[in-house]
Length: 114
Length: 112
Image (cartoon, rainbow over all chains, first blue to last red):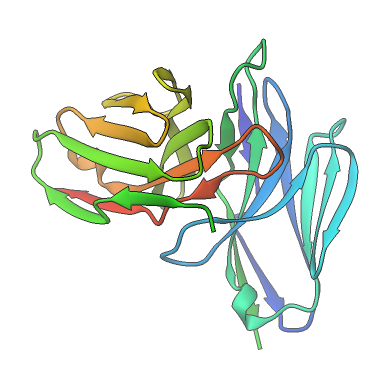
């Protein structure tokens, strides 16, 4: 089966650091993605991990451990505009890898307070 | 930004009527997806396509069908709309690289 878990909600303070965790159990794995989604808008791509380790991109970093089925998104120097939902997604290819199925978790709603 | 448009953006329809949503891309990407998003459920995959006339079911495909007769268009059809299909529908496109998927702006469908 397929299962992707994230906390439902988090609250953090402007200027602080927050870590959003994602654990997954999928039949296959070919990459993990993080997306940001503001209320009423489409999701936008933030980061991609396919190998273990940390990927840094400005204020955002994403970490992956394939053996643990675990990832986190780290947001530094939080700004009010970072208040949004953060979605974890796993690329789950079927046996043979002929397709590119992308499965999402339910998302974490982050509220940044002054 | 990826060239992907959904139409219509908003639609209200009656129970039992057929509805077709259109996703059009100008990026020549191989993969196209239809998701629905509901409170508490996140994005759930309905159907996806990995090439012209190549489609497969996602996790919530009952009551939906799709067609892809050319690279740029992916159609989602509700044969007989029900109130449980009231949702926001997102189309997405991707290539087979690590770019992730790019999303359209969504279609808000209300079935009354």
